Image (cartoon, rainbow, N blue to C red; front, side, top):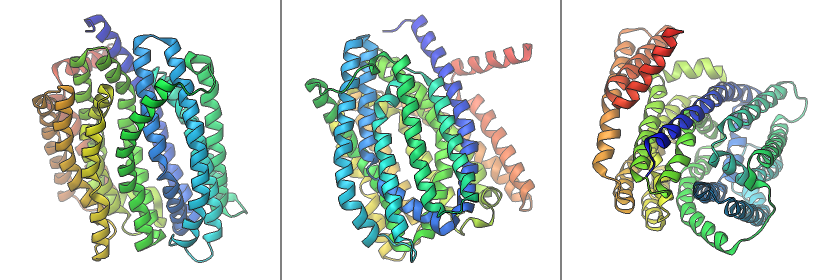
Length: 512
């Protein structure tokens, strides 16, 4: 078990990494939201919907990227925790080999299935099928480039080099903004140019990751191999993990395709814009979890389960509170916020999509750090079989609702209900497999966030009710709810140790 000095150093490292990632998050959120507006204005709602439909189809293959990335990160974190550099190199080289093999398979399958699907199944505007076919090729190449970057990303995150991760992320965001601005002046087909330049950025960022890792991550100074022991373990781990990611992709990108077939590309634009908001907010959560997850894996693997349990509770609590901070203003003032952000180009209905997308994020993240906990345990087979069986219900239920004439946003309600049930199932299995005490989750997560939820919603609703609609009401709702959430978080949401940390930081600021 780690001693107090070790835990203190881990806490300081987490704090430093979180600050670096918050810097990345803040800039990327501002850049990303502005970029989304510029792209919408440059492409228009119809072409933006075509891009969302094609990109989401390619993204369905991200089941492979996500599951393998998790497997690589897990095995690298375990070996780094053991301090065995040769084993780390074998893991990295095997990961490179796996990615090359998988990339070849995806390229072949993509070229067989993709053009047929785009040309014969997708619901596209007249005259844009040929453009969509070329866009598919750009998206497929971008996907393969990102797939080959997985071992390098995993090395940076596992070694907790969050400063570099933050800087490269900001560089990527700036290039995407420059692309969006270039579209406004382009004499060429803007949709095709957008797809090509996004592919070019993916390649450039891939090169940056490789250069950095070669210099600062010693395990990356190796080639390609297929270590039999790690190859089997990583594929087995990725396989069960991939089952969960596969169902998740079906419930997200699969439903995006279903929306395209039933309602058309304008609804894909609504879906895409709501995802822009959701993903911008999730960046805050990602920053906390990127700093916590390696520590959860290393602590659990080294036998310090109590510290791993504590970090898992903190991660889930922070994830909920961060999303909730942004959710309340959107709940009451989505129409005004979207009008200021997107202008008149935003399709009607984007507001309800955005509100419900954030509710889904709240529900999905209530147990987010506990997935890392069970991955650290390694006994994931039954967990992913049961959880995936429950979450699989979302797609067929949504299909039935659409056939019955329900509106496009009705799938969000299905998602919320199924994931509420899924959270109960997850908690029971995690407790059985890892020994995590369920009572601790209620005490350290649910009872902490419940009063914050009540005060935040109450403050936002009170201001929304007494003021007339407009920008000033939006500002007042955001200000009142933010103050209520931060104050109630301090008094009800933080442990004594976390309160002491906050007070020490405030004292330092006051002394300056």
